[in-house]
Length: 251
Image (cartoon, rainbow, N blue to C red; front, side, top):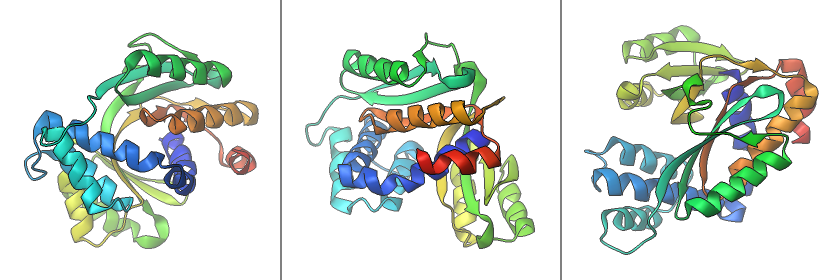
């Protein structure tokens, strides 16, 4: 999980840049469109849509923009036809990398993602080459200064979370996808603020990287994250704290 935490911290810092580039809202809109198309436009009956809308609201997406995306998904207004795709590959040091994609042109996206891997010391792999290393889970991160550890354990585990662990200056709450919303509701009811609340993929094993490979993998993840069709990127690396302190500011 360290790999996810390291990347989440860096991605959060570059969130402001994404907003300036207009990328973030575009990605959030795609997620809403696809969720509404597959499960209907009522977030109380469609967990994926509720999650996508909550994530958009947390990123300050205007309500009318969210509403337009929902209507595109339900067919009330016309919109692009996005396809869900997962691309898998390898980065520096043998790191497994998984990309969740929403695209209206699979061939275009495959070419662009392949090039990003190649110019950043990696390679795009075949379907199934690394997916088996990851489990679908709910993830919440809570800054350590915001909560007493014992109280967080009590609230999260009573709500059905699998685990609560400290990772640097964050607590990570892990849960099954089926209890994601009830854990989210419990944290909110307990007035426990989260930096991250998402359904993600968590690696069963990690690869420890040195400074050189750490720089390469973080640049790869940033380049993938900046690609318009990439919704999320997950990798199974671990960077020791002393190495992270050295390389994070450079990426």
